[in-house]
Length: 276
Image 1 (cartoon, one colour):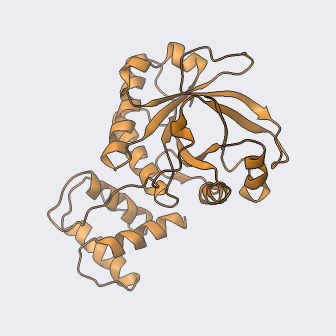
Image 2: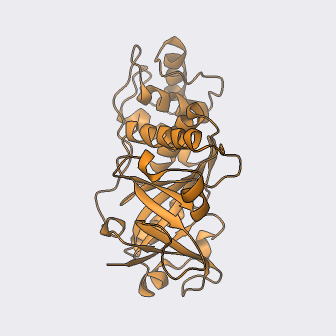
Image 3: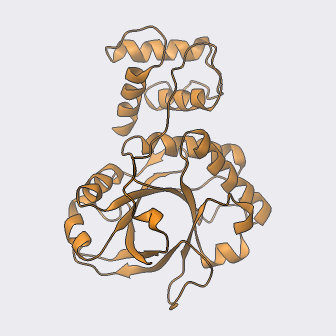
């Protein structure tokens, strides 16, 4: 089976997209850009997801990768996971591998992509994939280096069929469809994973307190940095400085100031980051 879809970002302003018309034209899934690098968000992400879901279109997301080493890749994955909480998805999260500054050697780039995917999984994101163009797939990264369950998204224009085995094929960046007065990326999916409207996928977050360590603490520290604590070190250790930042955040948001990060504090932190 083949399923029609599109991918969008702020370059397709959400107020100009009529998702109901796109659904009527046969679009069954969409992939919205959620984030870029370690600190940048896509201003249309939430609105695109809300509009598509309201029209009955399955929603997915992608992150534009800029990391030049594995620690940066992991930091980008944590930033992406935080943005995903602003608009839970039906399906997968893709890492967009195309930036010019990415390492030129296969081994280095494979390791960076794998570090990103592993950190996504640590943040509770279990369904993911990799986007790259024909040149990258042939010369810069290796399919065999990545998890078997990662979806493969190939961008290759001007050909009649995909040039490589893939789960999704982006065959055009200049499609004209009812519902948008401009050019759209056009995609075909060969897996029904892209059209299943499942339980929305969002990061899982445990209750945290002083003494805890790990990736969840790193996500907490990243969120606190974005919420007004830029000097806080993201080291995965919930110590006195992190506790102090949590207490200040709780007081400023009318929460019980106990230094424990439970559902209400997580919710306020996510809400604060979603407004950026």
